[in-house]
Amino acid sequence: KMNTDIGQHILKNPGVAQAIVDKADLKQSDIVLEVGPGTGNLTTRILEKAKRVIAVEQDPRMAAELTKRFQATPAAKRLELVLGDVIKMPELPYFDVCISNTPYQISSPLTFKLLATSPSPRSCVLMFQREFAMRLFAKPGEKLYSRLSVNAQMWAKVDHVMKVGKNNFNPPPQVESNVVRITPKNPRPQISYDEWDGLLRIAFVRKNRVLRSGFLGTSTVMEMLEANYKTFCAQNDIQLDDGPVDNAVDMDLDAGADEVEWDGIMDVDDDEEVPDFFREEADKKKLQDNPNRKRKGKVAELVRSKVKKVLEVETQLAEKRARLCDEGDFLKLLYAFNQEGIHFS
Ligand code: SAM
Image (tube, rainbow, N blue to C red; front, side, top):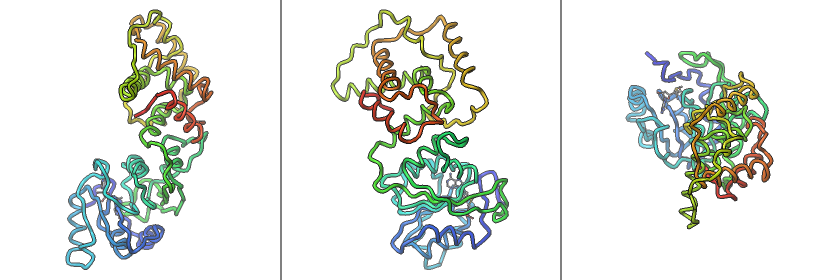
């Protein structure tokens, strides 16, 4: 009996399975990473076209079934089965192409992991639930535009391959699916993935907020940037005076208290409902009411003035909302921040 809780919707239509593998344009020399092989419906077709398959499967029962299926077949020695959670693997092994009927609960982390992989794979052919696939294509200002959209479009070209109705699966999932092909840009853009994604994580904590409040108004963010700045200075032999600031009292006047818990891993897109105006007013009020506002040191003040300069002067993006910023805006921001010694990783 299948456990639907862990995303085991087995593809039962052989035509769809074959189409997915065909769309990957495999070469005889390819090493293919397959995520979640299940009972091997895709695996068997991939083995016909590629040199080697590395199949990562979390469910031991599935892994056992897969082993049984290929045991004593000539293909067995070209199949390497890795038992485990692909997301928890610290580093993916080398592969040319990734193919996956993706367990839907790992769609987002898997996509980020594939986009961060360097050297980039040649392509990834992945089945996702429809809304997730739409997020990969979303443009600035569209409802589904998110950190995922910007990242996908920054690092890759995303093509729609086909729609797959739920009845092609056993058991049928709740939602419709789409197959997409993610082709990483070649050459890979010459920026650091961690820096870029670190900036996007901050901007998209609340994608409806203006960048000013996402940065200057969120003290956890400012504290992180301050810590990074100290590291940067230490690495570059830049002396810092971190004494107390005399007139610290006015420092945070343009900041909102940070009601956002910034844990660095959020990709929250569900704040559509609360208009920013109300949120920003509430932020201001909280701040005025807070008698324990921390006295900040000189480095905090320096970092704050750098961030302000980047947002207000260098890029003039302070009043723009993340959901309206395109790739070019974020690149401009990252460049200007880095010029000031402000880093995100
Ligand atoms: N490839 C098969 C097919 O198309 O019929 C099965 C696809 S099924 C939707 C997803 C498979 O991924 C399941 O076998 C499940 O056990 C496995 N899986 C779920 N989470 C995983 C993870 N984090 N790492 C590796 N495999 C995972």
